[in-house]
Image 1: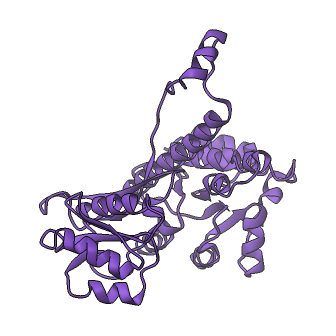
Image 2: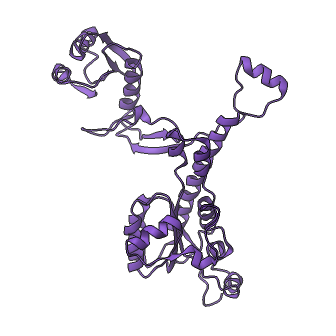
Image 3: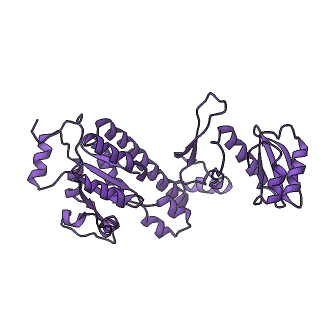
Length: 352
């Protein structure tokens, strides 16, 4: 092994990093911390501009490649001087010799996250605006670094920045197990991204059908040939259906937020049953136009009532089964007012 090579089982010193992110959360803090650790930063487009404006030393990608950004930013990092530096296996002297021959410096760390495709679709943007949010260079960077995890670290989430910096400070580099874990997260990240893009295209064009199938589909829409659900962790739950079971809440990527994006404002962590009952209660309450109250226990409604006010609706729903309502879930189809809150005060309720 050449003196300049490193084993894939070694701690990887981070001397040079490529940063190209759509989500700028924590970017400046990360850049400053890496610079303080002596890491040379290379960056592209708005990422480089953000770092430079904050006084963080950074080399623009164009200075590395010798080529300007092209096609309104569609081509920035797609260049051998970038991907050669990412994909070189540092345990192979032949790879390092080729880098030296072409005057390419290797990268030790890539930090990249992708254009907000799902958010753009959800915003109701036009087809052209959505297409422009299909990232090309970003996934290529992520895949290259994740494939070469033996020689490069890859970070795709701003939430990982603190642990990244802690490891660099504590170990002087990235441990092999850390690089492997980060690669797993990276491949999961781009798989979910690609699935979101594929699902959107499927919605636009539909499955390919023959003329006969097209006529039949007018009467009954065809089932999709493939289904690739993808879910993202929202939070850990207090317990599962039973107290001895573990559970977590996941949201369908690209789909509606859980309970319309509801947040736990006060109290202990929700359990699996809490979320299940809350979903059932909300779904039933949403069917009514007039003020309504729904009380659910163990996924079954034990009281449903309409009234002129929410307080009266709650009283009537409670009267339906005041025993089962203890420890139940209450849902309204209006914002809860003071009178309704006071009406509920005397009964233990898990979730409103």
